[in-house]
Image (cartoon, rainbow, N blue to C red; front, side):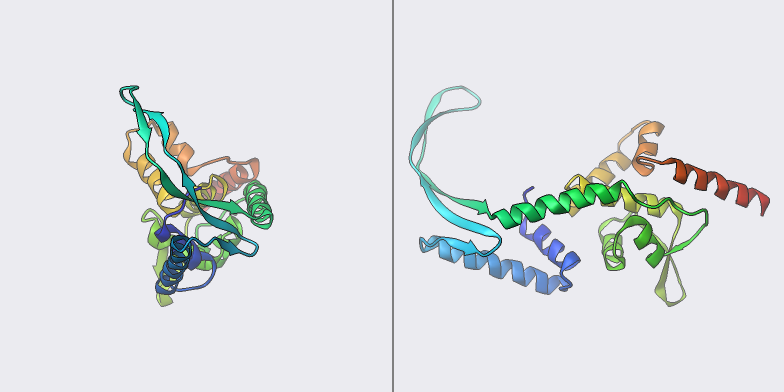
Length: 220
């Protein structure tokens, strides 16, 4: 997965506890250190992370992709990165844990409103991440009451689970997940497709809760 500097700063802001300015400055400083070292012909080794190296590629024959005509590819220098075994193991662990957790989310109880703490438990997402997503995904609009307290309804929880799946399971960046949601929302898809967006992988426990919720509303 490729990340831009802005997306890397977003990840630091979301997971490390830095504010946006601090995260952006850290990424810029990191890029500048690596760039300067590589320009000076030095390799960059980050313990537990990996190695950056500048490698020269000689001129070689190639072909124009449109015409098929043989053309020379000029010599150039390219930056290569080799991840450490520790980083590879960490990424693999995160992916496996994300997939496992996504399949074991709790069923949504049969009630109308949920606090941000309750939503965090139901979606396995920390409250500060939920507040951050609220700024990044305009479709996410919890009800705000006295003291700026947030209250989420069932449709917001389903949307959060969808965002979580896009980010943590399918590996999209914030921008990528946003584009996925906007593309499906704006396109003229069938009703079935729209339902699949907001109701992914419903289990029997969830369906039972939905039925009980409808019964309670009818009897109230």
